[in-house]
Amino acid sequence: MLLAERVSRSHRFAPGWPLWVFTLTLLPALLALGSWQLQRAAEKQQMQASIDALHQTPAMPLSAFAKTRPSDWQPLILRGQLEARHTWLLDNRTRDGRAGVEVLQAFQDTSGQWLLVNRGWLPWPDRRQTPQIETPSGELQLLAEKLPGNGTGWRPGSRRCAAGTANCVVAQLDLTALRLQSGIALQDWSVRLTGDGSSAALQLDWPALPMSASRHTGYAVQWFSLAAALIALFIWAGFRPDHRGNNNDEPDRA
Image 1 (spheres, rainbow, N blue to C red):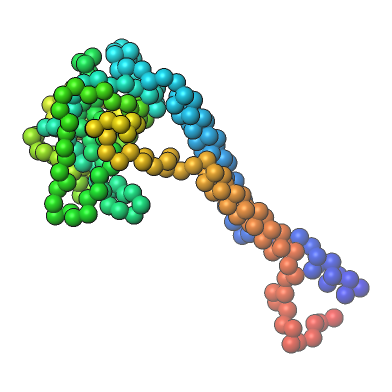
Image 2 (spheres, rainbow, N blue to C red; image 1 turned 45 degrees about the vertical axis):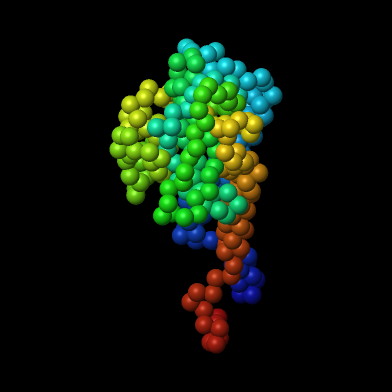
């Protein structure tokens, strides 16, 4: 009778209230994180599909967007001149492990609009010397694409550029700050060059999206795996025999 009672108690599911609280608190968070990563993966897939679709459309002149803003990644044809006096170097941009900058320059289109154009990447091996930027003169025709919006604000440690400063190094793209510093009515969106044939183009091997859909999916699998491990641990702990108060070196009392 006593042996049967012990066997029954050893197989009873009794995880205890601390484990209940721990599991019910952590499990929803893990599931929510996994679902959020799946949602981000779907968004990245949709974004990449939109980019691919836009890249199949013909480039449009900037004059077609005099009263509206182009869609993100819209191919554009720019006709106008680069302004050498207003050049900024976007710092901390690497290619194949090499340190460098991306060259940002003001561009006046024949439509009258001012744009910030990213001309591409330039190596900067010696930080003691500022890179020399050559600006092609005369009217240019450039192939570019409209970039999505960027975060604003100057990062800690970066310095503001005084008016008239040539090739000023910035740590983050802030169009509002660049507009105030230059005194030019830059559009509140920017573009980057896509055509290698222009004399204005530098190295244009643009990096892919910061995080692909597959990486988000991988993170989701990790979160769901942690949730499954938590459930397994909860069940194992609930059925584990409870020996508290029982000294195995002493005989049990009848």
